[in-house]
Amino acid sequence: MSSTLAQAQQEVVDEFAMLSDWQDRYEQLIEQGRDLPLIAPEHKLDENLVRGCQSRVWLHAELQDAALSTLSLPKGEGQNYAHNASTIHFTADSDALITKGIVALLVRVYNDRTPQEILGASTEFIDRIGLREHLSPNRANGLSAMIDQMKRYALAFSR
Amino acid sequence: MKPATLDPAYRIEEIRAQFPILKERVHGKPLIYFDNAATSQKPRRVIKAVSAYYATINANVHRGVHTLSNLATEAQEAAREAVRQHIHAKYAHEVIFTSGTTASMNLAASSLGQLLLKKGDEVLISGMEHHANIVPWQLACERYGAKLKVIPVTDSGELVIPGPTRNPGLFTDRTRILAITHVSNTLGTINPVKELVAQAKKLGIITVVDGAQAVPHMRIDVQDLGCDLYAFSGHKMYAPTGIGVLYGREELLEQMPPWQGGGEMIDQVTFEKTTYAKPPFKFEAGTPHIAGIIGLGEAVRWMQDYDLDAMAAHEHVLLEHATKELLTIDGLRIIGTAKEKVGVISIVIDGVHHYDLGTLLDQQGIAVRTGHHCTQPLMDRFGISGTTRVSFAPFNTIDEVDALVAATGRAVKMLKG
Image (cartoon, rainbow over all chains, first blue to last red; front, side):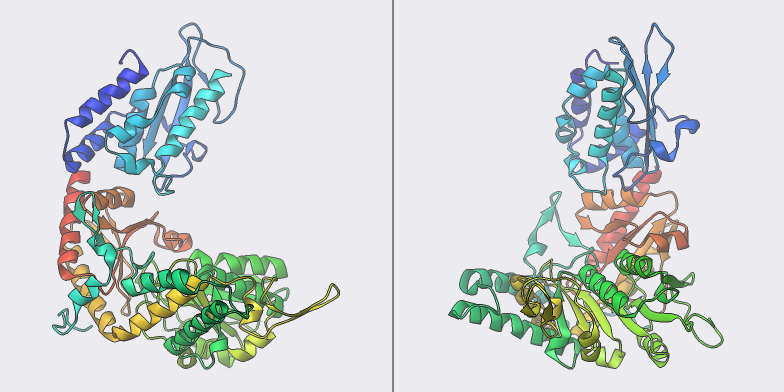
């Protein structure tokens, strides 16, 4: 894992910068999807679906803390855990390969970061890797919905 | 089916030249627009007509005594007359301007619901309806305690037609309204609307037809169809967005209560009672979308100048060619294989998600629609979550179809590895 979230973003940007052709970029994206930490079957539930995607995306988050056992939060609930050093571990899946690749990129960058890091992160790296069309507020693609959902988890875990 | 040969007399280059957007590039590639069933592109004449309205005669209609108001009113009413001719309505006042098919259907369902529906009555729709021809009726049924009944769809995407032997009991003695699509937006199926309407009429059932996907592709004669109401959108037939039509038979429109209240639709207003204007104005509350109406009028004239039959024949050649070539792709099947179809092909490919396919086609400059196409019950019927839909216009070419087939093959290869 890269040492900071910004460095992880830069790493992704650099990887994609070498690929000038759309075909290579999308093949790389599909390849990323294969490395996605898959959501456990018991969490692959409708309540973990990200709203706003034409394809189905399941996203699950767990708070991990070295000192305590792993805590899991139901989506959207702000329970009162105070763990300054705690990080969030995401798992996900999608039935579309490109979407799976996108969620894998996000997970790669945001995974095992503190809620504060995730909440403070900029998402312009998506634009810089030439996938800007996935950021448009189009109900067919759920990239912004995925980012919102990850940030909502971060917010819930930070309270 | 007619053989898939192009008519050498068909003026494809001349037609293409009239659509400025076809010069655009997408991801550095020439645009191939196969999403015509979602919205059509606009010929320069339509764009000019809308712009000329704003630049030269912009004024509110029907109210002013000044010159511009008169000119705007004349232009609007000339468009109404052009639409009347185009669909062969008996009178221009049978043409109601709405914001689109969805608004037309909400008007129809709301007003007819109030006029006709009582507890236990039935509204009959089909299994291939767009949500715009489902939800308004559900709302009306809920309000009046009526039931929504559905004509089933066969595996090939055709309606199970009611008849004494084939599907007895489809119309019951409680059926009050038949609301059915002329052409399926997802499957391309052309439904035997005339036959259905004739059967319904014999039983005194009011008939409403969703013509959104039919009007762009074929000659419509509402008197010949015999339906009571016929709805369509401007933006799918070369006109601007935000304008549509509800045709209604005069006698029925006279009886139907208004849908929305406001300016333009009244005769006399006092705080005790309001009397309404005659159709169409009874159903056109507020300032209309004048520019859109004028654009619609010009779109209709454009379609007439370019021979709708020749354009339909061209689309049919594209449909046949694309059907044949797409089926050569491994694992590809077509949802909607009715005998009578317009130029719409919905495909699914084993192991390929429609979102992935649509995204990779876009990267190659090809615009298609992916998803459920606002027909979720139909998706459930076929046990699929969505399709990739290719829909043709008169400006599409055989070369573009070949490019689509090659691009689809490339995408499938990337996705299946």
